[in-house]
Image 1 (spheres, rainbow, N blue to C red):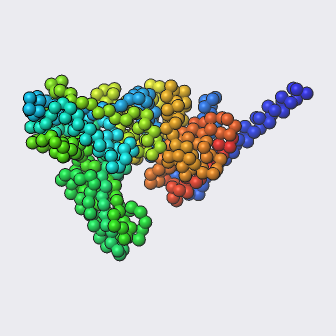
Image 2: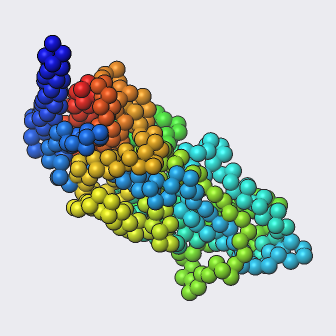
Image 3: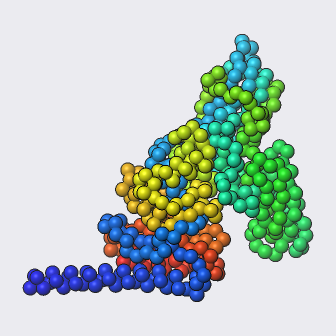
Length: 485
């Protein structure tokens, strides 16, 4: 009797497993065979984390751009190489001597360490984003400085001056989501354009002001008023260029409509803002604000300068949490640069990406992966579902598993996954990073099924017909089926 019962239980379990697998396969095939996906490319893989066996895959070795799921490589590698408590440092030096009258006969040097949180809106209330500048002025006062005869010089050179990673589009770089990393980033490298729109369609808009003030910035406004809702404008401008123009439309009858753009020259802006903070204090400044990029120095030796104070940025884990929850491109790119800076002293994007690819090749034998940025804004990235699930499997057993897992948004509950599977089987069971660009939709992460099974999954589609919202809803079906297994 016991033998028969055991046989029936085993048969029932095997039958249920087969049905579950078939349901997953059917849901994925239904997605692939959708009429709006007939000309699209799809890469999918689902792996059981306990057995390490592939439950189902389709085109899992196919590499393609995946949009913001690329950030999983930046955040995971940063955790592994830098650790969750790493803090980037900005150091302030002088090359002069403070005399008995409190006069600093020399320059102030701001040496960038790639801190993306300096004045960031994600870590400071808007009215207090630049409080650190007053703290810096107070540090100068503590040193007995009452007057500065030299210049305020910002130095972001150790992270290079590429301005943006390779593969970024001209249409992206002038906009807030296309703000590039810098050795001296400030205020998320963000500017706000304040517009007053017309009362009629196709009327010209008026650019009222730009905050924060950026010296020498010239912006030509071609934006028209429209019945369309929301921001339908685009800012065009290369890194370090003060000549920019903006086109498109904004809604009619708006007194103060804000459009966000990228800061052209963060290094120079840091020097300007610190010099203004000094001028607004009791310290007299007779020199100018300058940036190393424009100085053509033949020597830049900090061993010959005196360290006045150090400003520590936020913990790496807190940056990673913001990166994955809010999908912040700038933070992801900074993680790439910080990896390179830690390993080589050269904080360039190119060097960081080389290190990331080599790291996972050594750990997991990766081949055919190509990373041209750390955020996924580049359409030249080539990543497969297998690359993602291998990364996720590794991080599942990493000593930093908990930190990595907790950085992921939860379906129906938090971050960029809040709209996903809300009120459905997948709510609270899908922990993943999303990715969306024009003609690209992707998700990668973990699913904790009702049965207790835990899976790593990745799905990317390129060039589907229809809206990304419809693609998302069709992907939700797959997530719900897996969650119900």
